[in-house]
Image 1 (cartoon, rainbow over the protein chains, first blue to last red):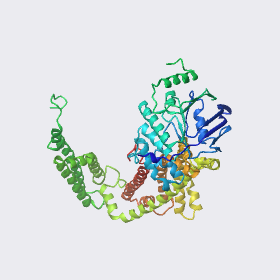
Image 2 (tube, rainbow over the protein chains, first blue to last red):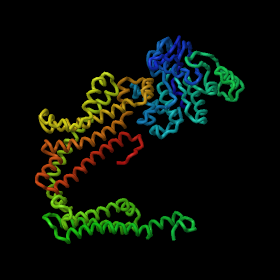
Image 3 (tube, rainbow over the protein chains, first blue to last red):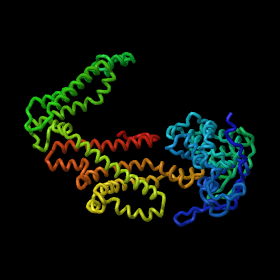
Image 4 (cartoon, one colour):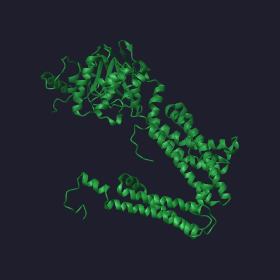
Length: 260
Length: 341
C-alpha cells in the first residue's frame, strides 16, 4: 500500500474575515467579493458553488496568497496570509504543466523551488504511484491525455504535503467519465492525508459528492447565500434521495429550480 | 495489365515482397534511372577529356577520372539495387539529383572550356575549380578557419548580450525604461553603417568586426527573447509561486525555459544577418577570411578561385545554420520539430 506516502497532516484552519475585493478595470473599480466571512475547519472539505464569474475563484487566489485582498484578512491557523506558501497549493483548471519538463520534473517543481529535492526526492515516485502514474515519469506533457495531465498537476501539489489543497475547478475540462473517476480519487487522497480542501466548482452534484460543506455564493459581488453542512458517509451515490433533494434545493438558491 | 483495372485481389504479403524485391518492372526502371544518372557523369568525363580546352586550365584528367569512377559507381549500385532492396532504397533518394548534376556538369563543361558560349574568363569550367581546391587548398583552409573564428566570437558575443538584454527587458521595468528607447533607435539600423567609425574606434579591425557582428546578432536575439519572456503564460508563474519559487527561480526555471523557442528564432535571424557583416568586414578591413580571399581573387582576376571560395562560404554558412538547428533540436526536444533543416 502507498498510504504512508502522504504525511498525516491535520490540515489548518482557514479564517476569512470581512474580505472584500475589487478589480481595477481602466479606472473603474469592479467589486467581486463583498465582505466574506468564512471559516474552514481543519481537515474540512469545503465546496464553493456559485454562478459563473461571481468571484469564487478570486477568493481561492486570495487564500493562496497570489493577491492580497482589498479589504479584510485571511489567516491560516491564526497567521495572516501575506503571500504564496507551499503549504497552500493550488490545482488549477488547466493542468499548466511545464512543457519542457517531463512528468517527474514537473512533480519535482515544488521540492526543487524549496531546495528539498535531495532530502525528499524519493517522495516523487511515491506520489506518482499515488495518482496512478508510475511508469509515466519520463513522459512529456504533450504525450499525456487531459486526465493524466491533471493527475500530474495533482501529484505536483501533493508532493509538498500541503496543509490546504486549493482546487480551482480542477475537473472542469475533463470528459465526464474521467471526471467521475477523479472525483472519487481526490476524496480518497483527502481522506488519507487529512489536509483542508477548498474546491471551486460549477457542478452541484460534484460538490455534493465530494465535500463535507457546501457554500453557495450570490452573483457578483459575491456574498454567501447559504452554508450547508453535508456530513454524508463516503462513498456517496449520485442517486441517493438526500443528495437529489439537496441538489434541487441548491438549484433553487441559484435561481435555476425551473430548469431541467 | 494495370493493377487498377485488374479484378484480382490485391497481392498478399509474400506476393508483394516478390514484386518489390525480385526482378520487377519497377526495379528495372529504377535501375534505368541509375544508368542514366551514371551516364550523365560519364558524359561529363568524356566531354572533359575528348574536346581540347580553349584556355589553360589544369586538373582536367583528374576531374574526368573522378567523374568516371563516380558514374560507374552509380551504375554498379543501380545494378545491385535490382536484386537488393536496401541498396535500391538508399540510391532512390539521390538518383534524380545525381542525374541532374551529371547533366549540369556536362553542360557547364561544354559551354565554358570547350565552346566558350559563356564569356571567358569570367565563367571558368568545373575542372578549374578542382584545380583551385587541389592546388590552393591551404590558403582556402586558412581563410575558412579565420572566418569561422571571427563568426564564432562575434556571434557568441552578440547572442549572449542580446539574450541578457532581452531577459532584462522582459523582466525589469526600470531596465526597459532606459534600454528600450536606445534599442529602438539603434537596433533597426544596419550595423555595417558603423563600419567606418568602428575601424578607427577599435584597436584592431578584428575587434571592430567582432563588435559589428555582435551588434547585428544582438538586435533580433534581444527582441525575440524579450517577446518570449513577455509572452510566458502567467499561470506558469502562479503555479511556481504557490510551490515556493523565489524570484530567481521564476527567471531561470520558468521565464527562460518558456521563452527558449522564441530565443532560437532570434538566434536564427541573428545568425543569418551576421554572415553579411562577416563577409563585408573581411572585404573592408580584416586581412583574413573568405571575404578577404574573394577580394584578393578579384584583384588577380582569378575567377575560378572566387567561385571556389563562394562554394566554401556557402558550405560554411549552411554548416553554422545546421549546427544551430541541432542545438535547438537537442534543447527543445520536448517539442515536435516542425521544420527539418
